[in-house]
Every structure is written in C-alpha cells, then in structure tokens.
Amino acid sequence: MIAFDANMLLYIIEIVIGGLLVGVGVHFVPVGGAPAAMAQATGVGTGTVQLAAGSGLTGLLSAGLMMSVTDNMLMIVISGAVGAMIMIDATMIVGNWVYIYGVGVPPCSAKVDYDPITKEPQPPYISPGTVGHGIPTVSFVSGTIGGLLGGAGGSLIYYALMSINGNPGLSGFFAIGIFVVNAVVASYNIQGTIEGFHDPKFKRVPRAVQVCLVASLVIGIFAVLITGGA
Amino acid sequence: MDMVSMGLLAAMGALATVAGASEDLESDVGSQSNPNSQVQLAAQVGHPHRIYNKAISGEPPSNALYAALAAVTASVLMSGYGMNAFFAIAIGAVAAAIFNGIFSVTAYMGRNTSQARFNQYVYLDVLRTHTTTIMAHAYITAFCVVTISYIMTAPWLPIQHPFPMPLVAFIWGLAIGAIGSSTGDVHYGAEREFQAYPFGSGLNAANSGDIVTKAEAGLRSSIDNAWFCARFGGPVTGMAFGLTVFLDNWRTTIFDPATQGWLAIVTGVVIVILFNIYNRILEIRSKKRYGPYPEYAGDIEA
Image (cartoon, rainbow over all chains, first blue to last red):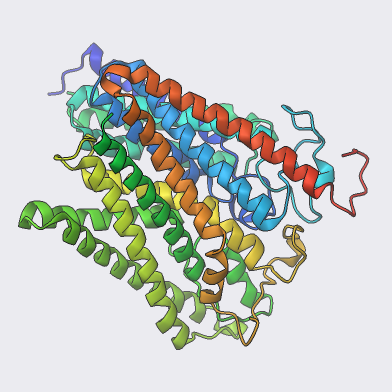
C-alpha cells in the first residue's frame, strides 16, 4: 500500500521544477550541430543534448559535493548552476579559439543583423554559403544562462531525490536520467540548431514547457516511488 | 586548504589536459562525431577515400561508456580482489580500449561496405594501422578520466565526493566527450578536411563532401589528420577539459564547502564573469584582425 503524504508531493514538485529548468535551459544553449563543426553555422559544433548534458552533469558533480556537507537547498542548487556555467563557458571560449585561430573565421550571427547586446553589425562578417560561425557575444551570454538553468535544474532534481533516500549514487543516476529525458524532449523542439535567446526558434519555448511538464511529472512520480518515497 | 589537496588538484588538472588532448585525437583518427558527416558524404559525391570512418555514436555517450566501463572494472578489481589502484585502473582502461576497438572495427566495416556502390573500399591496412592508434588514444583517455575519478572518491584522499567512482567517471566521460566534440573537432572538420579552400572562408554549403583525400605524397590517411590536429585542436581540447576540472575543483579546494560554501560560489561566479568579458575581447580582436568578408555586398556596414 502506498502512503501518500505532503512531503512526497513536495519532492515531485521539486523534480518537475527541475525538469522545467532543464527543458528551458537547453533552448538557451547555442548549438550549431554538424554544420557548426564545419564552420557553416553559428554556435558550438555539437548537439543540443550533448552540450547541455555535459554542462548540467558537471554541475551535478558540484552539487553532489556541496550536498555532502550542507542541507541548504539554495546553496546546493546555486553550486550546481555555477559548476555547469564554468564547464560551458570554458568550452565556448576554447571553441571560439578554434574558430578564430584554427579556422580563421570571426564569430558572427546569421539570425540577426545586429548583436542585441553589443549592437555590432553581423552580416559583413558572414562567409558566403554559411549561416554564421563561431560564438558571438549574444550566443555566449545565452549559453551561460543555459548552463545556469541546466545546472540548477539537475541539482534541484538531485536534491529532491537525496531528501527521499539519502543515497548519492542512486539519486545521482536518477537525476541524470530525468535530466537527459528533459534535454532530449527540448531538443526535438529545437530541431537541430539554435543560436540562443535571440533566435526565432526560441519562441517555441512555451511548447517545450508544456511537454517537459508532463514528462517530468510522470517521471517524477515514478522516481519518487522507485527510490523509496512511499 | 592544505598542500596535499592543492597537489592533487594540480594532478587532476594535468590528467584532464592529457585526457582532453587524447580524446580529441582519438575522434580525429576515427572521424567520429560531427566531421564524420563529411567523410560519409565524400564517397557519395565522387571522392572515395582512405579516411577511417567510425560514427559509433555521439562522442559524449561513447566516452561516458568507456570511462564508466574502465571505472567499473577498476572498482571491482580493487574492492573484490584487493588490487592496487594503479594496476586496477590500468586494466580497466585496457577493457575500455578493447571495447572501443570492437566498436571501431564494426563501424568502419559496416559503413564502408554499405558504400560499395560509390567505389568506396574497405582497406585492411587502414583497419590494421588505425584501429590500434584509436585504441591507444582511448586507453590514455580512459586511464586519465578514471584516475581523476579515483582521486575524487578514494576514501583515504582529502576530496570526498559522495558519488561512487563509476558514476563520477561516467559524468567526466560525458563532459570530456561534449568538450572534444565542441572544440577540437572543429579544427578537424572545418580546417583539416577542407584545406584545399582558402583559410578563413568557412565551409560553403555547396562544397559539402569535397574533403581533401590526397596527402603531400600519396593518399591522405587519418593518421595524417591526427598529426595535423595534434598541433592545435588536440591541445586546446585538453585545455578546455583541464580548465573545467581545475576551476570547478579549485574553488572548493581553496574554500572549504562546509564552512565557506558561499565564498566558493562567489569565486565561481567571478570566473564566469571573467570568461564572458574575455570572450568579448576575443570577438573584438578577431573582427579587427580579419575585417569584413572581402566580397560582402550587403547594405549593412561593418
């Protein structure tokens, strides 16, 4: 017989909020997929899930370390967010080194005529036959926000699961699973490439919120039950 | 903070740098990840080649698998058979390299035989020489990643991460794959594969699949590509992973998370702000150095 109490509901809500943060955060991560790896599109030259998971789970390591010494939820979640931001920023900086010094193309966006943050013109720097290349300032800032949301989301899920069973290994595995499900669902919404929050595709976020809400709710209920919530 | 912690942190940063470089070169020799799309396309647009072609999966999942596999093997040998950590991790990395070799051979044979109609051959000498090179790089990557995970989790060392060692290795494997795919592979995909086109032109979509198949003498092989990428793409990938591992752990080493947690967080935020400022400086300098595209004829002025 499953006993249903208020704490269980709270854990499920935390997992759902964490899932939503991951789903929205993925939309901020500037990824150009395979074309970006050939300097043919703006963004980091990898897939959405790959980079979001790489950064979000690095944040999970930071959150796990923090949770081993404190119960302060805010501190754990922010620590995870900072860990994810450091990973994604280091990756984007080095990515830009390769674009600038290795391939010889300056960073520029093809989705907007002027960078919304620096107000600099973009089209004169775009090589013909490409849709931008590198990681311009607006995409870099957007990626940092993506890391923040992804890292915070993953850490919140981990915090909820740890509060239930106190087993870091089990909670970590489930947090990775829930993270990846939300990242993949959001990637279908993005359909391959996105430059960041200035990209027209970013307007699709509400749809991802709806789907991630349902997905996180279903997984949240099962995760809480399986990991010992009832 | 004590001297042992700082020494271990430095060792982790160094191991991560080596792991990042070898991970990128492993994917360059095998043409894994995104540049593989061009290798796959080349034969179909009339350029049969001697480039190794293994797209096993995205780099993050495959490296997470190898790292976790090596860590599980090492963990079992240490806890079940009381083996010394150094030998246990070395044997674990051998297991990961063998799995990598099996996946590589099946991927190469499968992909190239399926392109027989485009005159793409399976070269047995390529299979023999390149697979061992790939496995050697995979061994170094797995060894370094598992050693980092061991340093973070071993009960007798100062950093006491609560996750079990295979899970830490899994996460670092995923991160190293994401970094290798995002940074070093661009040097291979955008520059080395298309060296026949002028430097700085990016890749015009119309030229997709037109990869360089001839070398300075004879036909180009994937080991030539690793030689080229080892000059820039590989080392910078190592720097990216080294920076991630070092900076993320540095802030919790100099500030004890138990008593100075907020200081560790603030340090991380400062690092992130500095990264953003540096990227802006990089953007300004690159635009000033290269200038607008010479044949640009649009209305918006640079």
